[in-house]
Length: 326
Ligand SMILES: Nc1ncnc2c1ncn2[C@@H]1O[C@H](COP(=O)(O)OP(=O)(O)OP(=O)(O)O)[C@@H](O)[C@H]1O
Image (cartoon, rainbow, N blue to C red):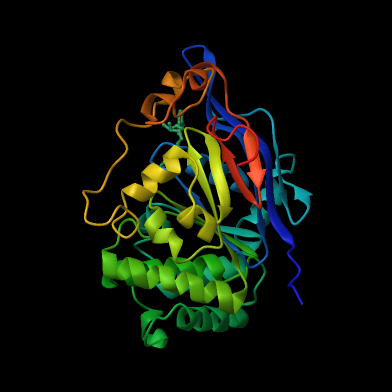
């Protein structure tokens, strides 16, 4: 029997703008995605594509200068963008937890790491004894050794990988249905990166936590996630189950991202990177395809007409190369 897929997070047509030089510029433009319980969804794109802004909006943590014009975000069916400050505070940590790009900034250097995890539990209603027990058990779940001793360590006494495990334990102590992990391994070396990624997969299976994994590296997320959304210059250009995106990428941007990964690039050939960079907000085209300037397959129509999304078998692409059915 097929498992029931319950929507945990639904983003519908989210627009997030910044006012630059007297006009609103899109950091996030018409982004929609759904994460179901227990799933891992990756949001992938180069730096500056709007991944973090999308995640921050889900936590109500976007900068004050950000303007959310259109769009809705639902968590377990409840609309978030209209909720009160107090409701946001309850949601953060208990409903949705987020691991930020700079993990060290999440830890207080003056407080023992165990205490920091425990406090997060206490903030969301755990009693003293229960919070201590849950902390030690969560420290074990994230693969930390000798947790009784480690509880009393300070952040600087731990390795980078261990600190990241502490941060994951802190994020999961209240058993949130959804974890948003924004580039959780960028500061770590490759071996530790792999260990942390495999830990996330284990925790996803054991605890049933849904994960939105943000990364610029399609290779890193490919082994881990169920669905991938590819984001370019504020918009989702392609999405689908991970095997479809890896085996049959459609959008030239996705192909470019894959071409720069050793295991997916052309065999015995130099790896290709995508020429150019993601344009800054004020330099993004107001009409046409955002990827136009960098696309190797661009056509005349791409410059002036924005591509519509087409969908087939759960695989979405927004590109003029696929005008009707993808
Ligand atoms: N406070 C701000 N004011 C104006 N523009 C901003 C602000 N914060 C972010 N931006 C812009 O919004 C765009 C999207 O940024 P975002 O951080 O979401 O990108 P990203 O895909 O997560 O990349 P990275 O991995 O580098 O964080 C970028 O062009 C960025 O410069």
